Length: 239
Image 1: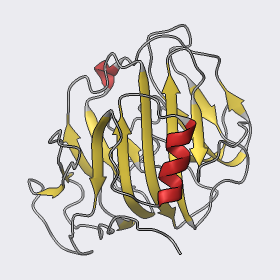
Image 2: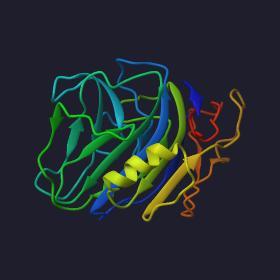
Image 3: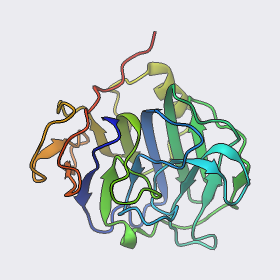
Image 4: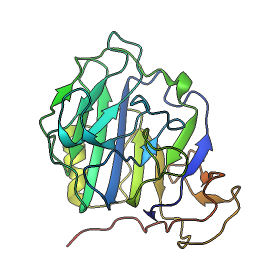
């Protein structure tokens, strides 16, 4: 979806609870840089970085970076809230393929366009599982820092969630294939293209965005967003 309006949600219970690995992949294009906005979250945005979505981070709270990205989870191990902040100056208004990845016994990571930038901040190795008891709402169109009425300013072409950590080779291959429909093992959510034009007034009960993974976790417009932003057609192979 593109623009500054439109937040799409689904109520869930204990999503990702007990997983020992996690990957979220997204094709996105921001209209802003030096910003804190995000595009995906597994709870109602609450200003924390624990809910499985990568976001833009204007100034890293832990690493002191500038124009970075941030990713965090809520886990059962000693770290409990593994987080990572990327290298400086990774925000852009060009299309990006962004991946957040974690596996028990490893550090949490962000990959951008098939490459893992050296982080300015990264918590220690975390061994455990995801504590999904607070993951009660799939949110597309807003990250953890958005408040009511604030949404992603840019385009979300596609977002997928896996119940394992994708390998380096899988991440590199997904970037190289530029929006291939190849389905990898462990796919739990897959969102793209609803075909709803910008400015269309829609009932909040309408399933605007279908979950293509087969899990049936279709999204509806949140009560505050009954005028839809345009939902972009899935990102295709770049020239």
